[in-house]
Image (cartoon, rainbow, N blue to C red; front, top):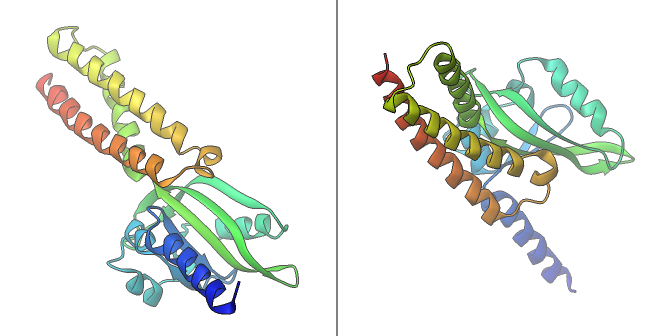
Length: 209
């Protein structure tokens, strides 16, 4: 393979990784400088564009506690090590965002991490839906009358719970390492369905008040 062909191959890999990836992808140095990110990553953290994120951000800005990132970097210092966790990070406006985060070392210099790569799946809506569902189900168990409307709530709650189980299974760190674009799109479709069901559930719940 010629140098030009190899360069073109790497450009294509870069485009797929950053331009077409439905997940947020970011490259940073251990010191916190953001080298690059894709548009999906910028949206997750509340920026209008990747250029805005690159111009005004530092990787430390996305952590409520600086020690959390320091612990992460220590874990990644061992060659071949990686991290996959469900974590709460800080958005541009200071609010919390929940993500499935997979972090790894993109490159080393003399055995020391030079670039860190993070891949994020935003599950903030899912987390909020879970909290709402717990509140609603808790309210039912504390004294709702088993009439037609409350039965409808039970049915919707079960449907939402089934979707959550399916999404949680797909976004588990072990599964996330193997997930492809089609499966990710299915997850997003399931989350959209869940949001519609949550709206129906809220309407029924308000009707019981």
